[in-house]
Amino acid sequence: MKLLSAPASPFGRKVKIVAIEKGMMDKIEYVAMATAPSAPSETLARDNPLIKIPTLVLDDGRSLYDSFVICDYLDTLHTGSKVLPAAGTRRWEVLTVHALGSGIADAAILCRYENVLRPEALRWPDWTQGQMKKIAGGLDWLESNVAVIGNAGASDVDLGQVAVACALGYLDFRFADINWRVARPRLDGWFVEFSKRTSMQRTMPSA
Ligand SMILES: N[C@@H](CCC(=O)N[C@@H](CS)C(=O)NCC(=O)O)C(=O)O
Image (cartoon, rainbow, N blue to C red; front, side, top):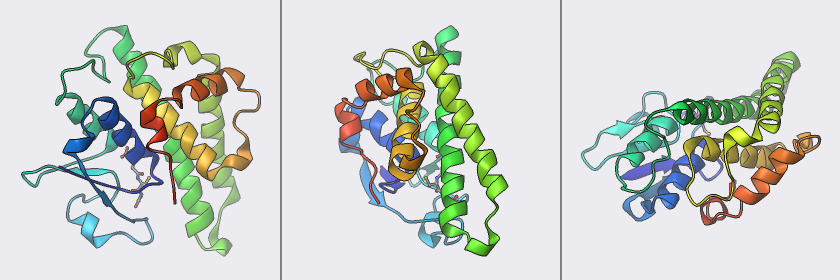
């Protein structure tokens, strides 16, 4: 199967981390892809009508998207502990933490497009501020509920943890100036510990 993605994508990173953690990276061919709302990739459009990365193209030609669906699919291909708990309270916690991590990454990507791709004269500071409020609110919730994210040093990861780590990694990569660590020492400690994993180190974002 082929993973269409880009080295800067926090969503592509989520898929790669799950694949590495679950020993499946050798089954996946990585295909670098550049796309943006203002410059959509025609190649990618053939496999994903939303023209977004990551997209996973299976050996029979079918495509899977988005990153959550791809991770859920990968979870069916290994016999280890699942990144998505099948049932119980922990399932809903993991899904909600995943939604929060992905939501922070979504807001950050939208701010990036607004402030890098959109012509300067058309930029809308109030809109960016609204997205930054979502990021700050999400980070504050994680700071107050770091125990819900779960043990950063545990041998097994779940998808909520991976989504949060990818969002924080993306903020460090593209939004270092917001200093998200200030007043969030518990979340910082969690991220320092989680970042020691080989899967995190092998997937550092790059331009
Ligand atoms: N919900 C999607 C979000 C994916 C996404 O926003 N990807 C960005 C790159 S990180 C993208 O492809 N943007 C191009 C566009 O929006 O046209 C997922 O989880 O995979």
